[in-house]
Amino acid sequence: MTADPVFTNYWNQATPENAGKHGLVEEPRDAYMWGTLDEMYAYCQANNLPFKQHTFLFWCCGADPDWLATLPAADIRAELEEFMIDFFARYPKTAYVEVVNEPFQSPPPAAIRNALGGDTNYAWVRWMYQKARQYAPSDCELWINENNILKGGSRVTSYKNLINFLKTDGTIDAVGMQGHWLESVSASTIQNTLNQMDDLNLPLYITEYDVHVADDNAQRDVWAAQFPVFWEHPAVKGVTLWGYKQGQMWRSNGYLLRTDGSERPSMTWLRNYLNPPGATLTIQAEIT
Image: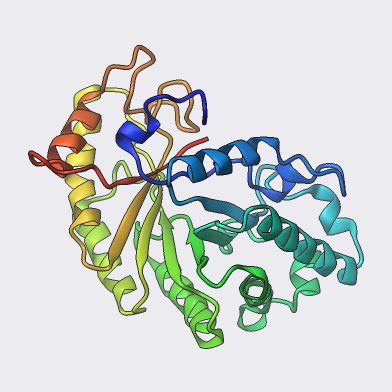
């Protein structure tokens, strides 16, 4: 973060792409590696930026430590609680937390789900949110985040069912929907999905948005078709980008700034869309 001198010229929120994941922080067991997360948190505090944690439970790509699933049930619960307790003690001004990431796309193995109460009525997810609510500061918002929602389909119904359980428990503050793999999804499909999600009566956030298109003008056209649907929907309270610099993104063609610092047409379009004369850019961005 400290090596990015232009970040605050564009963005007003930061999220660690990987540094906050349990598997990156605590591998091996009880050997914490907070360094990168410390740096980002300090940057956010110094620059008055909201800091969003990603994530407490996400069973994909090493995001959670493999050793966790090998433990007895009581130890699994204890380790997950310990991670939350230690995190909030270290980063007490965290603004938002994506407590569980991709509960449908990337659920943890049965050993972990069963240790947290099993699958019935999403008990394992609800346990995570109950504990997060217990340990989080009172002003920290608890979010959920899932992939392949904005494309529509049956997962929208399943996601809403889960969220309604969390609402009943009083443990959810906002709903995240990832913005990956939308390059061929129509604006009308996205609009319809947002309308379906709106009846949850919770703030909606577009998370992890990127447009993985190599051609500059074609990428701009996708941005111009999709982004206004997000930004102008009354239930959508923010859009989070999954990186913006060439060579520093999970999806390599999604960048908005080239390595020489020049803007791709999508970035120029975005500034012009959001910034009438005298305005301030207010989009949120996630970075590594």
